[in-house]
Structure formats: structure tokens, C-alpha cells
Image (cartoon, rainbow, N blue to C red; front, side):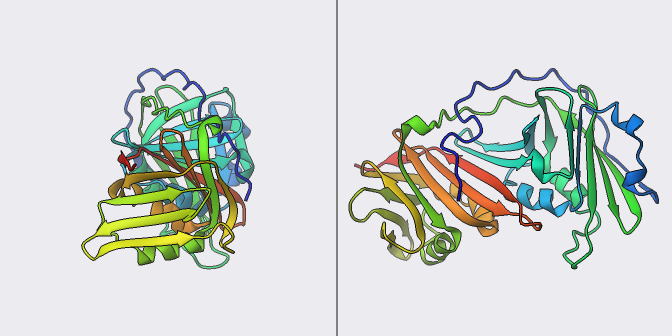
Amino acid sequence: MTVEEDENGSCDTPGAILQNIRPTRRSTTFATMPLSTQSQADDEQYVLVASLDNARNLSNILKAITFKDHAIFTATPNGLKVTVEDSKCLQANAFIQAEIFQEYTIKEDLVGFQINLTVLLDCLNIFGGSTVPGVSTALRMCYRGYGYPLTLFLEEAGVVTVCKINTQEPEEPIDFEFCSNNVTNKVILQSESLKEAFSELDMTSEVLQITMSPSQPYFRLSTFGSSGNAHYDYSKDSDMMELFRCTKTQTNRYKMSLLKPSTKALALSCKVSVRTDSRGFLSLQYLVRNDDGQICFVEYYCCPDEEVD
């Protein structure tokens, strides 16, 4: 697993907030023309165009961060970043690199807007999200910029659906100031082992306690639920452990209600990086392979509930 030490500008100064964007009405129309017939002249009006042969490669990664209705889309020449937040205590980011798309054209250094994520997912699955081999929905996503909706062209079996979804002014994302220089402990695990741990821990617990230490118990997950206390330990030499880098003993608790949304990303992932910084803030970074075997990342940041001495 290749995990960048400073993922996608965790400590960067957030970009300027866009002006108010006029609300537009969502509409859906049907046509029988292939997406390939859309002229290049049509593309000239858009500041962002992104195409996928399989819309599931976008919808699946978005489902991994869907726990609130609205999401902030930030597009740069490197790709798309989609951010969802909850109560200023939890932030989820999905990163879809430009190389994932069959076509990715952006005319500005930064394009941003806020959109109803639930409506977007409904549109992406308007043909039913078929998992039949050889059957997929092609997607062409276009955005004209300030004052315009996000337009989706979806094609399956020769039928094209056009969806226009209203956009809003994006709120400034929370800056958790999670920098690699402040990371004290980090482990990389195979996702299957973390899924097993969650299946054995008592999920009625209000908190998940995480202990990371250069000495035993090395990496421990603990819950305190109605069935009593439960602990799940990992040895630093475990076959499930791909990287163990801990410099100090840390024990922190995190609200289970905040962490539960991250299990959607865990279910899709093959590897997960668990990091804590000197303040006890938690980063969970999931490596996700899409239907075409390409790699995307989903990252969750979570504030500690309380520190345990």
C-alpha cells in the first residue's frame, strides 16, 4: 500500500470560498443518442468535464462517504476531492484521481461547489446500478461554473438520461491540521483483519478506544458495551500488519457514532492506514480498488472524545 505521508494537502490553506450560486431545478430527460455524439463545441461551455465508462466507479466511492446529504466537490487538475462533514468532529474525503476518468478536462486551477449527495447517487444509479458482467452505465459529468447546475449524461443500452442537479456555495471544509510531521503512531493493516475485529467487538459501546504503543499491546481496539469490556489485539509482527511505526504510547477514545460511517469505506477497501497525531486526532485512510482494478483513496478524520491517562 502506498500512502502519502501528507495526503492531498492536509495542512494546506483552504481555497477561497466561491460566490453564491443560484439554485437550479433538477430535471431528467430521455434521449436515444450515444454520448459519443456530443460535439466538442458543447464542451467549450464547461469548466469541468469528466467521463467514465462505468458510473459505478464513481458511485461506489461516493457511497463510502455518504452519511450526510450534502458534499463539497473540489476539482483540480489532479482530480476530484469530495468532502462530507459532521458536527465539526468528523470529516470524510474521497479522492478520485484524474487518471481514473477516461476523459478529464478542467479549465481552471480550482473548481468547487456543494451538491446534494443523495440526489447525485440517485442519478448515478438511475438505470438500477446493474452488476451484470458486460453491462455498465457510461457517465459524462459537466459543470459550467458559477450559477449553473451539475449536468450528468448517463447512457446504458443506447438510452441517455440527462440529469441537472442544483449546486450551492460550498462551505469552507474544516481544517483538521493533520500533518505528517505531527503523526506519532501509524500502522497499515489488511482490511479483512479490521473487519474481523469490528465483528467481534461490542458495537453497543459508546466509544472505541484505540491504544497504539511501541511495546505491548502494540495495537489494541477496545469497547465497553452492554456485554462487558472487549479487547482486540494485534502484534506488530502479525501477518495482517503491513507497517508498524509507533513512537509513543497513546490511548484515545472516539465516539462510535462518528466512526460507524467509516465502516462503509472499510467494506470496500483492501488495506487501511491508521494514524494518530500528537493531539490524538485519528486518520483512517482506506485503499479502494474499483471495478476496473484502479486505486482510489477514502480518508476519515475524527476528533478524540477523551484522552485516557
